[in-house]
Image 1 (cartoon, rainbow, N blue to C red):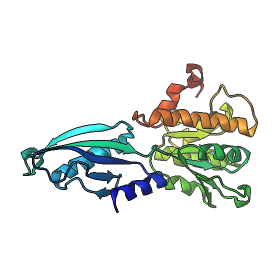
Image 2: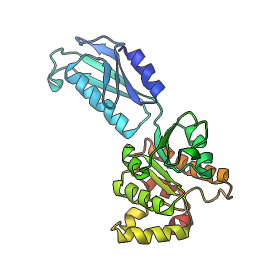
Image 3: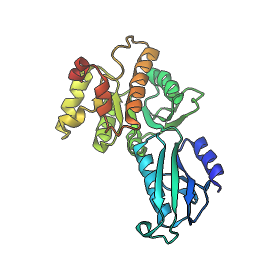
Image 4: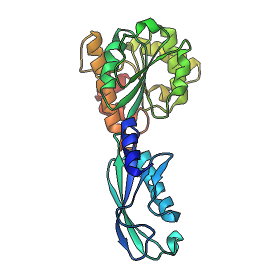
Length: 277
């Protein structure tokens, strides 16, 4: 596949990549200026010359993908002994991140708040899995950008999310909420975990989770009550807007800054609320 076709396909899929371009050639080089290569986390398309130069270019591009940086980068490579290539010239490569980073979000529960929240999340640069065991709770039309998942074993869906995912739990059953919470905390690789409910619910859950061996430090990463405190109201759409705002604040802080799970949203919250969480 040509680099331009690959780039178009990847952008349509919402998969981030780095476009690597030779912008300058000095002396003898394996490929001419203007040659391009597209690098994803696990694939490459086209070539900038092969050999150790290409290996180093792939390595640098994947470091950029892992850090989710959106900054372009210029690098000069001498094609001599240091790279194990005998061309003897030099080349300058431009690295351009392509594709907006996307948050992977699992929303558990298709109740009133879930039906108000998912359309908001689906309109953002997010991939949403909307999960419930009750198919009749889902609306007839699922928003573009969201995938309906009907599974009797709802907790099993926690393992189907990639590392760094966002989890929002708002099911119809407190015991199910507790089991989902335990599964998510056990993974401990989430960017955000929000549980719908009051401070009283949080205290009860923390007590039960302590009995299961979960540490207080780990439970601090759970947002409950979740959402932006300044957004008042109890209507489903008001609650949904509050939760969506907290999710947006989290991924804006996470992408490109290397924050670890749960830390960035805590920093964004008022000190008074952090003390209660």
